[in-house]
Amino acid sequence: ASGPLSHMNFFFLGCAREKDSATKWSNAVDILVAGGIHVKLDCMDEHTLNTMVSETLCLSPRLTRPLSNVIYHKTKGNPLFVSQLMRSLNKEGLLRPSLSRRRWEWDTKKIRSRRLPDDVAIFLTDSLGELPDKVQRALFVLSCFGASSES
Image (cartoon, rainbow, N blue to C red; front, side, top):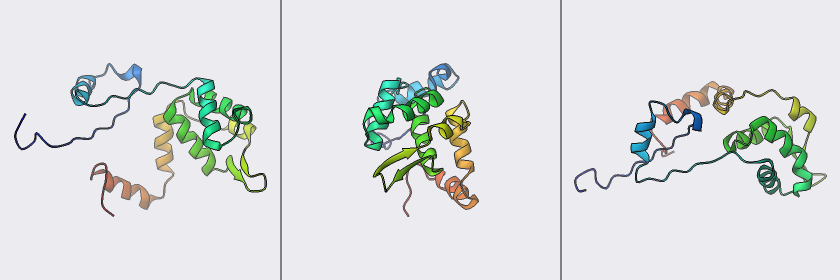
């Protein structure tokens, strides 16, 4: 095709659960991804999640198994939920580097007892709600500019 819009690029990033894919938006999404790249991330099994945690923390899988077991049961292996939970645990000091032991440490009991929403969207929304008001307002304004903005 030729014309003024033929060489324009369009970036669309969407996230949906498989069970929600039959919504009124599915036709629009099908049109958007036609000719694009569609990446499907399945939930990880316990072994894969342990491998990811092990490599992330640079520890052997044997050492990370108790942590990854708790993470798996809290997230059901959802990759987005796993990464956000690990960031949150680190921010809260439940997953922290130990300078004296020169490795990562965690409190499995405290992590296990931590209450989480069942839905990753609620978890992410709650995380955004914890940001300072000025940061939330800045993110709101920046979101109007699209995927990137000059500083």
